[in-house]
Length: 244
Ligand code: GLN
Image (tube, rainbow, N blue to C red; front, side, top):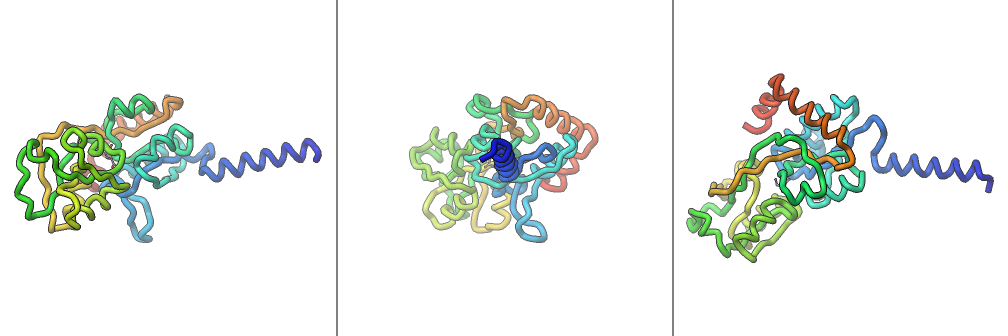
């Protein structure tokens, strides 16, 4: 085979590989786990659109960077791996800034304060303080802060790919409680009147957008967008439209 043909073939393969990853110069790829309403969820008119508060912020981040946003929906516990392998450019997934995660990725300035809450079946009267959740059977989302935190209280933890599946397990009476982030828990509660939400003394958590440590410019650009959105009132408008 002629050398030029071989090179041509290689270039074509490289181009196709890049296209396969959805990566191109003018596209910014955000990774999310769209089972976390109101921050990210599947819905809209077509029923398969990825929407939510984080997605609106991500759109503005892409716009300010002069790029088109592409959303990749994946498992929550695959997001950091996807980021560090270059499959996605940043994570917008209600991800709490934690020291463990900061060891492998950079986070933007915090953009939302949350906390953990409990969901239990409505007839459960046994939980009033943190002491009452000791040794209970927890359902959590795999790889979440709730997953990590639950181990302080119990050995009985079942982890699911989505909060939704954890809630199904609760409704089926297989676990005592779901430990989940406050806003998605309230969102699921609204559709499940047979459950109730319990607030205990859990610490605050701050969500940030995660960026690879190799991309300091993207991190700056995200922080810049967040600052602008806060200053021009659009951030508050998005909170009112999506959250409260
Ligand atoms: N905030 C939690 C975390 O970072 C849960 C996020 C999520 O499930 N999307 O682990």
